[in-house]
Length: 244
Length: 394
Image (tube, rainbow over all chains, first blue to last red; front, side):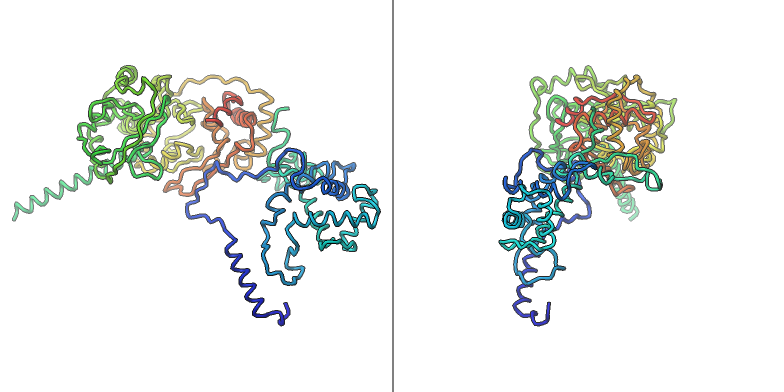
């Protein structure tokens, strides 16, 4: 921030923001005797396994599914993002605390910021909601059809324009911001625990050889040059846990 | 002058004797773990009102503080001795054997007097526990005379001259004030002790209290006397960690028992003849297969491959008595709900096992328990999913 911006107004505003922050943050503290009843182990909140979208409208879902099929396509190596349930993962994320920006400080002031200052856009759910219609308009204007109707090659052209920022979206959302968020969420969905809706049948982990959620791999640490013998396991287990 | 001095000395030594009596009474009150049933969680000391599941209905423990109206402040030492020795209340009515008088009857009058003297010194609390919830006809106290005729043998402990003084002291504590059989001796359908199978393990409040005899699978054949002493003193040893009600017993009672008494208890327990052993049925290979997969992914992080465990931290499962118990209730509950080890002076920092009930279904819990009960030299009757479902719903 240049010295000329260092005004009394800015200082006061920042101070107010600091106060608001101090009120909003509530930390869990453990006293000297941690009362942690064993049965109350933190149980992760699993995604609702029922099919159907909670956040996305039909039109939004049609764009998301088409875009996911290009970001991680199904190929000879295995299922792609669509087959692995990534659309459901993103849908549940956007409907939940992440999409609602619960992890962000979302109050003013909103001075002009630097890219190094972190997230500078509305909450993630809002970014998707504003960007998808704008991208659809861009697709119609530049390629002549809604995104899902385009050929894979033309879809890639649109996505590349979003990624580079060459596409100018109407409605105030930056194309680069949206693309970066979509790509990030797609990877998260493809590699997160299947409990959260994506990475179905541990497809993402099988692709890269990730062994999953075992707490301790000590027996294998010193066994160099050998293949890790165990199949991947998710928080909810693996097929071998149940009798076939 | 001399006479005054003498009188003063007498008064002082009288006060000293009274202090000693109260101190001994307090020690015995802790050894008998009276607080386990007579002190509510976060409630006033020994004021009663703890709900006890008798197997037929709920019995609420008495207020044993010296409050005259609601406690035992109006009782005499004779009445207290009769309660401990004969299971009768101050007015002569029958007490329910949820109050373990079938064990306390073995105690000496001197020990009962010491406990009574101590109870007179705890803060008097005016508190009336809720009425018992017992179905007809068990709500008729007089019927306990029939129960007593069937199960109750009144009489103080008679030392066995063929045994050592320590063994006799151990037998006196285990079968008397310690009332170990209250949980560790199997009960018949009227909740009476099956004395021909004394201390061979019993199910109480949905926990299985382990077989304390020399049984080589579910019993303590592999435990040395020192193992037992360490377990009672600290809440764990290289082979096992106390869990459930035994964790409370270790925390509230046995960790504060003198080394001499613990050694006596250990010597007596080590002398118990092995309980009968049945050859368990062979486990279903499908259960062993899924059980092994669950063990490798979920259990082996701490209990290690081969069930070797980490002595004092994560109990070894190979050769473990609880794991191979004749009844799998405790081991199933540990998997379902997890556990937290007791905090004692010697081992103040508890270890915890997480709960797996939220991620394993009944069949999976049954399979992993069947697997650990039948691997690495262990042998135990396979567990069915239905047994897990019952414990989940308890």
